[in-house]
Length: 528
Image 1 (cartoon, rainbow, N blue to C red):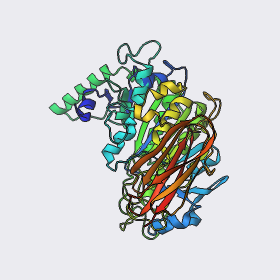
Image 2 (image 1 turned 90 degrees about the horizontal axis):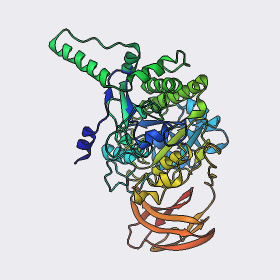
Image 3 (image 1 turned 180 degrees about the vertical axis):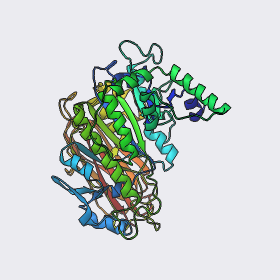
Image 4 (image 1 turned 135 degrees about the vertical axis):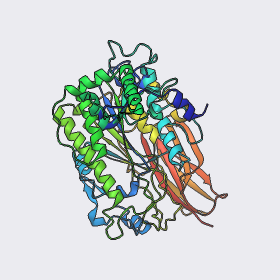
């Protein structure tokens, strides 16, 4: 069965009129991920808000490398942000943010934002649809997985869903998505674990008991009948309406900002008492192949507007969580299906690329920057990609373990076998939430090679703290050349391994080192 057919047969019921014109999707209560998130199998009241930035966001113009600014500027002469316009970060002078992102800069300075550099996966796919599937399923790029990472989690927590739900212990949706259809992210082994609210307008119609008017025609009567049936069969409409009714005041959100409209609904439902643990919202428009900036001022234009709305919406959401007294319970994350190329194109835009930064935000988050500025070649070409530093599945697994308080063994079982051996524990959540977080050791020199440049072979020297250690060789397009080393070491040690690149074309290659929570990427130049 094809994935599209599978999803169509297991699609969650869509609630067509919920909150102010936005579809809201509710994850099925029997899904293991939802049950854990909602306090079913796992005792936690924590909430995760997932923000999808659709289209492939340009990470290099969002999180800007100050320490290598000359290389960045040379690669993007027609869209580079002026160095004097970059928003500086307190206590960290190597990296800054796009000038439109004052809200997120303020969250960073309040230690409520973690910036994770160069997140991706081996063998990146540059198709919007396939790349989105990979991010939602947490699969490798060469395998098709028909369940989502959150759906598998909810199925673990609520293994019998939807049988017997809602019930006295779980009266609410397992997860809610604002949008017309449930996505692969929440697909469980047999059914989708999500419930949808189609739009913000639909949400407000639901809680106000109103509908858009229907025409006085035969088609209008049929539409009215369909709406009535949908309301009668929607198990969670009453609980959602009751939760929304308990909240009569919220802090201010920006206008003309669809992401802010969605996040305002999420904050209201959390405060209203829903046990829902996963909320998904989306914001599109990031496929900026042309006119990403204006030709006269690179700080403004399409991308600047998008980033400004994302930043303003998240900051307003965080302020509202404080106003509502629920800031301790909520963590959010952003992702896009891929980044963009290092070098801009001649159309004042950027083309589909590989790794890009992610944001994790909230009061429980360990603030700061994780990882180093991306390696940028001296003479970047249109084919050069940002090399991956962190595998996106490690962000998922860390949140499941450190935020939703699952055991490491349980988390490992929620990912494909060929993925779980490479998951890292990352310093994303503050100590004491579930267990002690691991330290951030990025910045130490743990990986070198000699000679560099090299003609045929180079010796890679690395320092491991023991445990699972991985060294990968990646080319500038993001393609995995080889897993050069994958081994468990009993204790801290410094080791060397020879990389034979005699069969490779001349050019830049990256050695990626991973050991526990630590990773580093080193550029290597092969010459004739």
